[in-house]
Image 1 (cartoon, rainbow, N blue to C red):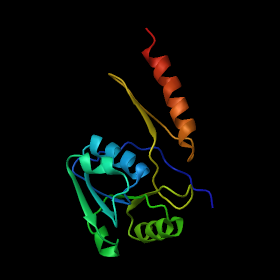
Image 2: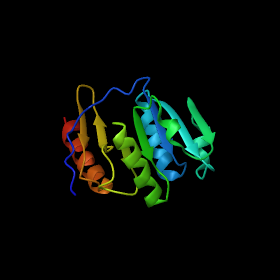
Image 3: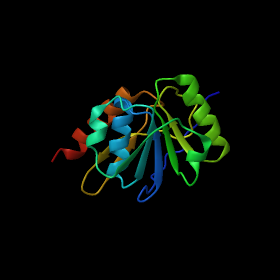
Length: 149
């Protein structure tokens, strides 16, 4: 089933966001969430990307994920390498009306991250329906166009 995503800018300041997994992709998502003021918590059995340990304002819980972890959560990033587990996370979150971004599926999610350009007076977000390299290329083209003077 194809999902249609409504483009929306959201204030993440002080919103509790949960990242499940701690690899390279999780690291990039955590950095983005922190940049926008989210209260980020990570649940993982082990930290696969050491750079995560260097991030500030981050809580890491080395444990198995459980449904109780979702209480008062605004957004979840399912960033494990197990696509079946990520799908289960999505299904659980979706039933609870929690936004969830699934790193192993273009379908089993209800929220996407976008490639963002921020200038002095403009913020542009690009989504290419789950193809991040394409989003980055378009964002970079927009950046070049807007920064020409």
